[in-house]
Length: 335
Image (cartoon, rainbow, N blue to C red; front, side, top):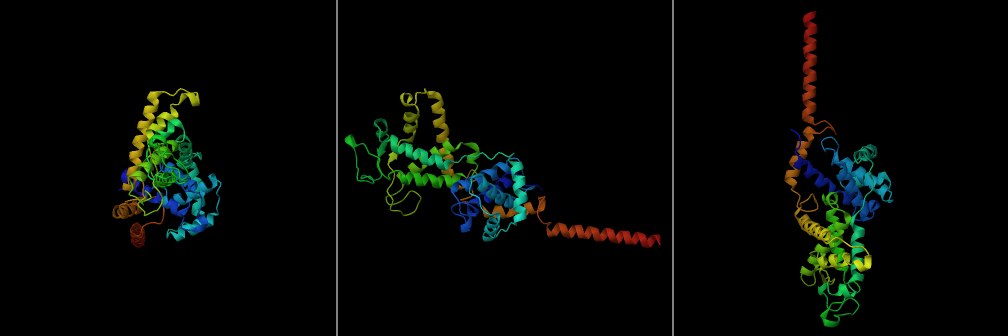
């Protein structure tokens, strides 16, 4: 029997989660450590390829290595293909160089040579910098409703009327939390459904909620960190006041359209929260390994690539031997 769509999706979820361990800032092999955008590009190439291809026809293990190799070229972070081979050995899933190069050609054809990719990492940084500037303005000060640290990182406290003044490193916990959320998002299905600007903004909104809700002394990621909490920021209010400010941008924004954007980003926030539950194709959390083993066994019986299973090979030998015996019997009967 062939794999069902849900079984194929489970395999893709598992293999895509291994890409950051092969290439990226957290790669197992130090020589394969590159910027996070390389791992994001590899994950997106891998996902795009399997939108129109099947794991039963193309080996996902080989394709993920090819995606990492191609992504390193696309992002100008080239590395020797032999290092990737060494990286697969470190992960106990050896893929030889010749298979990587052959798979790279298939990958290019599978994505229709579309190598243009954008990722949320830059958007997280850009929104954080814009927030730091905008929250110091008259309109922006009212959006900070509560401070996680009353003194500010450079000694500034509350301004006139109890308004919190954002200064120094006050937004760093939110920024770092958003990057951790994006690390989960890039290996999921979300980059195929939402733009990087939407993902980056939603990640900041979720990170701000988590940082403000975290107990004192908690950095927002569950670890006991001494980093201060972020100020509590009205992010929806920021979107409305920042992008409906026609006097500054000299562009009149449709209010209904802005409401639709806010609704879309709010819905995306819920998806990002659910990534920690292993939903939406994120293999960094709660993967059902027992079910995965069963799917792997099923794949071995219906795949069109790789070595022939021993069971099938035994049947072929038996048929060949039987055919030879019948042929010999016919020849003896003729004699």
